[in-house]
Length: 273
Image (cartoon, rainbow, N blue to C red):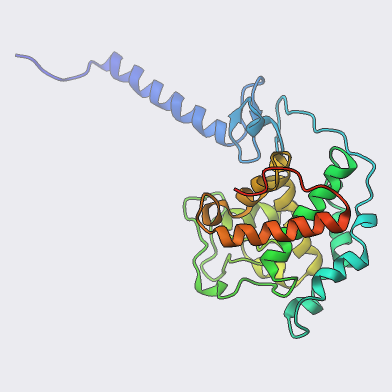
């Protein structure tokens, strides 16, 4: 009579193979990569720019391009900053919160912001950053997302950054930082409790700007050479790009091209997404 029983030696081999696969996956997700692979900013192993580029934690990480000699504070003048925030109503919460001084203090922790490539590249990056900030905050009017507390921004699959059920991870700050999987690592990198005190982004203006610069340097700066459209996709692509909301895409582009004009630089190609 035929049976489907598995002999003990074969069963042992199968169990060992499963355990080996499990351990390999677990190690890969916690920077236990082999010497020839990079551990990405998210803890996975690989050898492409996604793993060895920005945020690479260990392994043969790609060397970052050298920083240029641009002084961001000489480009982001008080006049330029005021030209944005002065368009907000005097009653806006951001009028007593955002300032050029807070931006420059936060910038001290991000020395590579707008300092890669040519001088024109730096000016385009500054124009792009403030274009998105202008759109996200309504000319520095809003510190927190409108109706944000009513929205669920907890991704329970992001187990590395478990949500505090008493906290909300809705948009806050110049680029409206959202979701637990952003608040968690941003807090770790900057030095505040992003998961248990996300409101810090709306109460400390320097930390608020730092979250925007953290998101920018980790998520947006790596694609900026592809054109302004790529930066839109990096910030809000799923909700705006590929025809999802062409009006907001065009609004961002208008701010960008205006700031490029003010800074005396050509906006380049590939403006939309």
